[in-house]
Length: 427
Image (cartoon, rainbow, N blue to C red; front, side, top):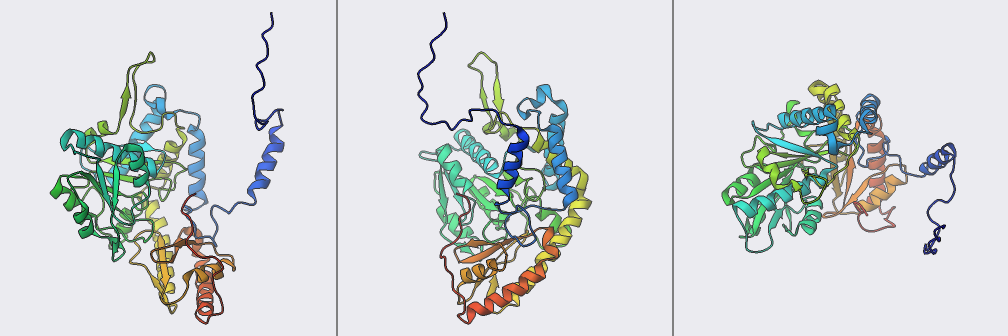
């Protein structure tokens, strides 16, 4: 007897009804993509991590080679992928002066790396320094919003200090914010808004004096700052060479130039990993144990990061960062030469923020946008943020010329902003 058809309860027909040939769909997708902003262009200063077509090809081809392998089962089913992951983590730990016995895990991005460090700090504190109330994390004004996301998920509380001291973390303010419920303190190397690395040594010493977990967020600078220091830049200590740094987050899909998305959550002592690992045995399938949020994940990102790191080596990264350092120097000098524009702090990585002294910086942003330049609005103070990559070597002088002309026009009162307020980071 044939089963009766289930009554129709679907509210619409959004799910595709008929099969369609891929060739036609592909053409539609590519046509629709034409309206998107280019991910990497010499007239765009949005965040795009581009180090050359050869590096991009390496990242993509290595990803493709392992994209079908599931990182969840790397240890049992894909030993070559597990070996790549171990080598990748070991290489970055070495770069960041980690001691013997350090460890780490790959994650899907900087947010997940920060969340895992927060979970580890929370669970470590339960064992070694339990608190009476909600566990608190003290962070600078400029710390990434991932700390607040993590607190919402983990039942923690972020205490964000109210100001930045000279565009860096206000260590005195952070010290004053520590309470008996504080379990973790953090700094950025460098933060997104300003580009100057926080005084990690001072923050780490503060953490040691209060027996706190200390996290150095190197999502942006973890793969830049070591090479800038090798090139002679005055980079303040920020990594595991600093006593008291317990964990770090480092994004490899940013300035490690790997395919998205891969980051690392690194630990001074690999034994601490048990505090952010989740292990469950109470079901028929056997032990489930993962060090991060994600379960199934493509092996492609790990392979991509390992391939780029190994192909470039120190020599290649130094070559790329030397070229980008020269671009940054030209940009900072050029902005400083324009009357009324001021660069915030001393940029240590590859992003530069500047503001206007006595006139509307957002009018300047709109004026340059009208000439085809794409930049990012910031606030506190109202300012413009520029992310740099190797493509800007040929366009930076044109940008500075347009910036000078637009700034002069704004100062004369010949141009005002049609739109007020800063841009959204992510919506």
